[in-house]
Image: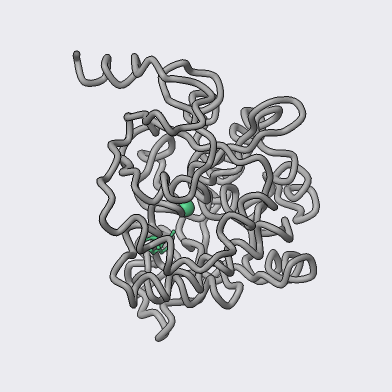
Length: 291
Ligand code: HBI
Ligand code: FE
């Protein structure tokens, strides 16, 4: 098949992955339109994350030479990242099975989608593409403490699967790695990749009165449900990456035991024990639901 005329999404869907679900990025086969789309996504997001992304992400962008000069070559990007924290970025066709995902993280390999979203999904897509994974996740992997957290998460994931409590750990990933906020000198900032790669949620997460903003609490997060197809109704705030790592550097087995029989908490709910930094009005969600 003439792969030159395929979009990167079609190519990813047609290749047979290796046993660890990695594929060849085939960097030479991206079309000009796809490189241009990366540049437009990058320029828009770079502009909106200024003053809103955490300082670590902003400095890493420069260190890793992430720029609007076309889709990055993951091997060359990994050579730069590896020098800083030992992490590499490995191309995959899309979501990989949990145990494969955890094994990669436990070995300092971040699986990144090798396809870029089609123009029709420019503003929102369900599945992580190369822009979400590289613009959203990779800069934080250059932060040594967060890099340690991500490796520990991978190892914790393997254990959670053995205990059958993966859903508790997936919530930790969701409310930190994907949608986490951090307190900095100048105020709240973003480190979650799902926010960093979304122009609308970058503003909403920090500035809208609708969502709750609650101080990070490991057990509380593991009990909290989340929504996947809209802005978050609650964001959790860490004081620092050291605080996140310290909170998670404990025997997860005990934590799983503690949350095992506890009731789930709905995504929009607050509880009396919460370190409530902002009680959301939930207006955005009520309007959306036509309430
Ligand atoms: N696969 N490529 C990819 N990227 C992810 O972020 C990802 C995944 N598989 C599973 C997964 N995330 C989540 O279930 C994690 O919470 C484990
Ligand atoms: Fe992600």
